Amino acid sequence: MKTTTTRPARFPPNFRLDTINELVKTYRDLSAVWDDAAKIFGTHSSPLYKSTWLAYEVAVKYASIYIGDDSNRLSWFIFENNCGWEGRATKDNTGKIRKIRTAKQLLALIDA
Image (cartoon, rainbow, N blue to C red; front, side):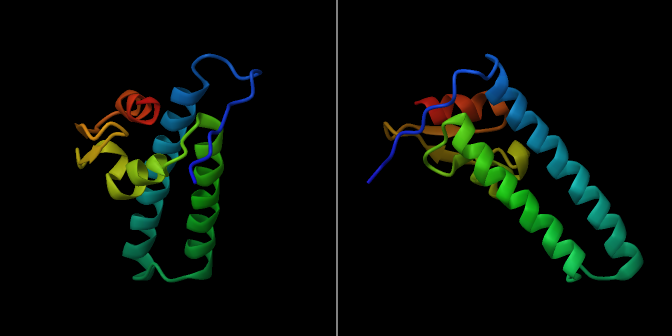
């Protein structure tokens, strides 16, 4: 059963776009830090690495609620589409195939 999530009215108009852009920036920063750490320590299996990414995944999950993403598209955009760098395509709710490369395109997909 699909549920509809409504955003609280107290958020500014660009809140959704700003939220996605901040998550993308954080993802890129975290990836760069951990890639550099792996060069030094040779692994991505430390408890600190795992807990950092778990906290980030939780932030993405809650951000999805606030931006009105009922279909887990934000998580897909960040983790599977590499924040749009992959330029992967997915179907919207009407069945139309869309390539998603930007946060604005992601919001259009969520709103479709």
